[in-house]
Image 1 (cartoon, one colour):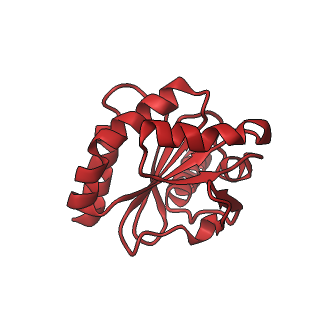
Image 2 (tube, rainbow, N blue to C red):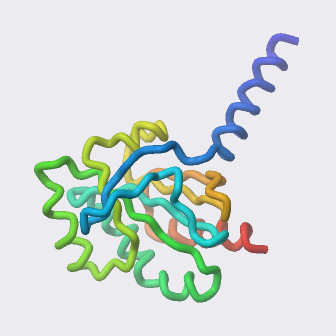
Length: 161
């Protein structure tokens, strides 16, 4: 009985975590505008939050791979990507040049103290969240292997059905 109850509580916690709202953390855009993370939305359509750092090679490979198909994804699903840099204050000036160099068309936000990352309990990057049109977290993935971005668009497609 106790094992079943513990398992039920764990399952409930996992489901709750997956359908959790985003925590309220104040970040800045690379142009210095203030954004509260609990207000991130995409006009009722799904969106993806991708944590990265300028020094993280797998992060950059993932964002490059998504960049190649991002326009198609947007045309098909209306999905939007928020790329969250966790570069610390001394490296923050490297973010905008990196984004421009790679031609990333994402909404880039800066999390120099890792407040947003910590509030979500994220340990390592790259880390990706897929949120539904209401801002609920419905999918999480960490690490990157070539082709992993296909799983992201599949999750988005499920949400718009």
